[in-house]
Image (tube, rainbow over all chains, first blue to last red; front, side, top):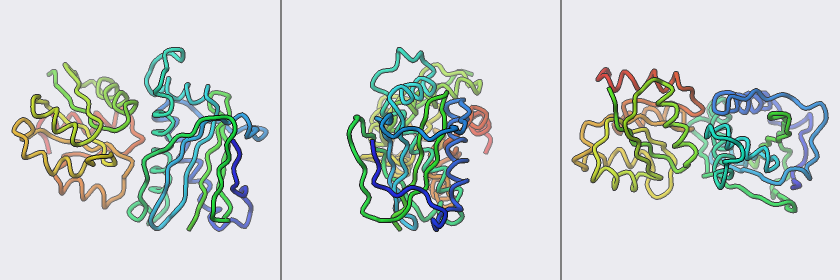
Length: 162
Length: 127
């Protein structure tokens, strides 16, 4: 997976939201998956990310929050959420990643003063595959944070359109 | 006391998490019913009496707020407490859900302790 979004840069007008994005993600993984996310030493290669969950934000904040990872990470999320062995996980993988994305997006917007009431979430969508790109028509920088989930990389990003 | 619960959420994964959280909270469940949206839940309630309903807000076909507005029309659902479990955690959403008839409100992400804190007093008939 590749992203057409510009990476996070220091003059990003939404830079102050980055700690809230980090905290929102960490809370969801700790509370719902009993998993403590850590920070990677080196950035994860985007090519390894072959499943992406996305939730649209509309209202006072318009954009897309996405979580990209590989299939094994997504399957492990489903395993932890369902409380079943990894090899027993089936078609719930997309549902699980979509729901994680939904909770991170909801948690994130609720942490930004004034946005809780003024921003609605779309139902989550999940894209799978090795060769796709996400292109945003809005040329705004994205907020992006990488984590290690059980030593596997995940990337959480918010592309702010307006 | 053993109860029958109806869990309404468009995510099957989330329905299973809510079911497990109820059990982890020490609430004894004799039977769990599931529905993927408000319309499906109303259909379930036509034939089934439950003691507690846990319901998401954002769902396709019929959302959680419309569902609780329509609950009084179903004989089996009269007096059954509803707890909303949703990512829509703003003050306005809470007020709207309570105005529609919800008895409690849990924000996702949540813990089993929060389910216990909200669920047990409601099952015990406390406000």
